[in-house]
Amino acid sequence: MSDLTAFIAGLPKAELHVHHVGSASPRIVAELAARHPGSKVPADPEALADYFTFTDFAHFVQVYLSVVDLIRDAEDVRLLTYGVAEDMARQNIRYAELTVTPYSSTSRGIPDGAFLEAIEDARTTAERDLGVVLRWTFDIPGEAGLAAAEETARIATEMGPDGLVSFGLGGPEIGVPRPQFKPYFDRALAAGLHSVPHAGETTGPGTVWDALTSLRAERIGHGTSAAQDPRLLEHLAERGIPLEVCPTSNIATRAVEDLDSHPIGEMVKAGVLVTVNSDDPPMFGTDLNAEYGIAARLLGLDAPGVADLAKNAVRASFLDAAGKTRLNEEIDAYLAGWQRREP
Image (cartoon, rainbow, N blue to C red; front, top):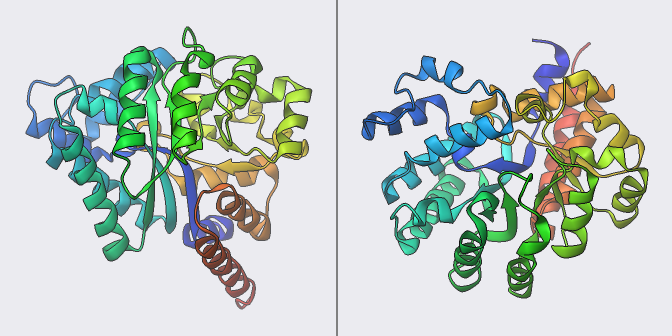
């Protein structure tokens, strides 16, 4: 293990773009598959690596939804959620805004109240037992259309649990224009939630502009194609609108050809606030520590630079002011201790 890899492993971190079902470890996915025989998903953790090899974004969505189909009752939801927090604790992730898609579960027969009770029970237990603070982004699965948008907005605005902080939009971008979801984002914003849609991952910068103008985005999920539009990068930098960058995910879904082609450097050079995230880590064979290592290589960062990257996520988060101060102080103390080590 290199010094920088070791530094990243121990660094206190926040994560802002990571999906609930997409964070299920092979152990949890295999356990769910075993509980619900007959699924296409392998019940052997070792076989999942091949199953999670994607040809393109459409194939990724297909596989992702097959895992969603394993979440069939409230106990499945609780098991999954607490397991995600356990994996985060092992990476020294102190705070995460986990993207949750209630419609995927309620449309499959899990009552909305039972679903919310399960994630909240896992959240409070994880904070008590593991020291991991979880908050929720409830997102619309765009491929499911306006019925899904209505259900997501209803649950978020009428039943929103204590951990809910933001409202998002995920799924395919091609054929799913952002402006059609404006009324649902307007409702969420009126209810005090923040706007964090995915945009510009597999489509051009026009989708990012749509997310900014129609959905009043406060952060952009991915935003990979923003680098194609200098005026858009300038706008994001001037307005302080962060990008949730997920390097390995972009390669796995073929949004970017290879890591050396990733535009993260152009984003940073333009002054955009960039955060690094893992998206669907087990599905992409990664975790947040690995993503920080990739970003450090692409951006030429040393330990202080990586610590600053971690503080970007704190700054861009919807954590309360006191929580941000505590986490920033923890990052600073960790860096100072690292720098005091014997040579």
